[in-house]
Amino acid sequence: MTTNDEAFARAQRATPGGVNSPVRAYRSVGGTPRAIVAARGAYVTDVEGREYVDLVASWGPAILGHAHPSVVAAVQAAAARGLSFGASTPAETELAELVEHRVSLPGADGPRRPVERLRLVSTGTEATMTAIRLARGATGRDLLVKFAGHYHGHSDGLLAESGSGVATLALPGSAGVPAPIAAQTIVVPYNDAAALERLFAERGAEIAGVIVEAAAANMGVVPPAPGFHALIRRLTRQHGALMISDEVLTGFRVAPAGYWGHAAESWDPDLFTFGKVVGGGMPLAALGGRADVMELLAPLGPVYQAGTLSGNPVAVAAGLATLQNADAAVYERLDAVAAIVSAETSEALSAAGVAHTVQRAGNLFSFAFRESAPRDYDEVRDQEAFRYRAFFHAMLDAGVSLPPSVFEAWFVTAAHDDAAVARILDALPAAARAAAAATPAA
Ligand SMILES: *Cc1c(COP(=O)(O)O)cnc(C)c1O
Image 1: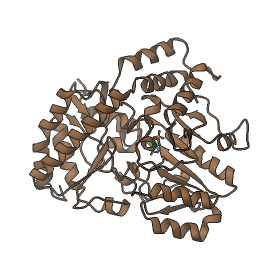
Image 2 (image 1 turned 180 degrees about the vertical axis):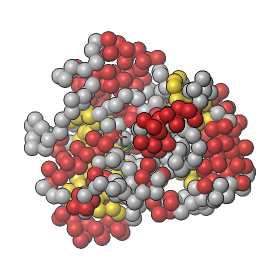
Image 3 (image 1 turned 90 degrees about the vertical axis):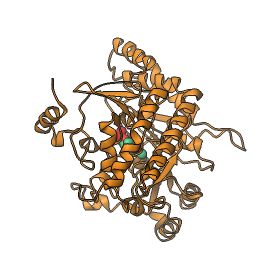
Image 4 (image 1 turned 30 degrees about the horizontal axis):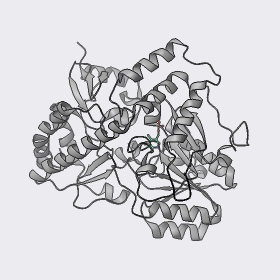
């Protein structure tokens, strides 16, 4: 039998760091990453045959649980009809219509339909990269505004003070990004209304767009302060810039219409980006928004974007089946599981005397090992992250797979039944005691 240690040693000789995406390497929690060979429902199985209750869910897509029978059947049927055509398909139009419909909400002045056109791409990175190119093409301006700790994928202009793996590895950004390109991105502290107003007052006429995570969830979960998105909307409109809401992580996970549908306030962005859930676990993402902006894309307009595998029929089948099955009962279960797991984890940490806060954005949640809830990236980084390392490993040893970084959200699925939840809850007291006993050097 191959062990996880053997699998990882071999992976490190074949692949940089043994991984194809950095956070998978366990660098911030230490130890050997589990080599996963199968996943079903709420569980993943490693190469040693050990089963774990999974709270990573492929970093979000698996809202129905892993290998949901309807999704697998749709993928198998699509694959049997051909893997890729390099031509238009009726199914990709169906997926676009479904997304456009799902993000439509009733409004005071009639229905709000913020996504009038949708284009499919293969990754969230491509979606945000293209949305930014569109904002620049639409405005004829270069400057992009992003928020510290927000992650929008790994394209050159977007790595400045990013969350996710950049946060996990404590990188300031990335080597290999030319200074003139980095200079086109201005990073503002998240939830800092005054800083944003000041920036627009000084440089508003140069700003092409503001990109913001619909709710920050790549530095742990940090929801937007009341009125913050509305302020972005007001300032961008006032100064002729575009607002891009990045729902790659939150979209179709926190509510049928994404965080946009979940938030109490109303702010209609010009462009949305989607990924993760919309592809149902296959490489598929999308950007969408106002028709007049979206139709600046080639072949109609001057902003170029393309993809050999864009709208791949197998990926489209997975996305369609996932969204079609994500009904009200699914969202109820996601919310219920998130509520109990977050509350019981907090209970266990309190009982062990571990200072912490829990933050939620719908059914997404995470913990910060500090006294007060962090509102921005500086506060997120100011915590006893070493406690998570001990907590993570105690949970893993007890058969629960958490995100291998304190800077990531926990992801539940609708397949987390009472038995799976019970396994999580059973593991909590010992893990909380491990967190309490942890020391920075350990
Ligand atoms: C995951 C993520 C991305 C990048 O998507 P990839 O498919 O990994 O390229 C972009 N934005 C947000 C908010 C994300 O969570």
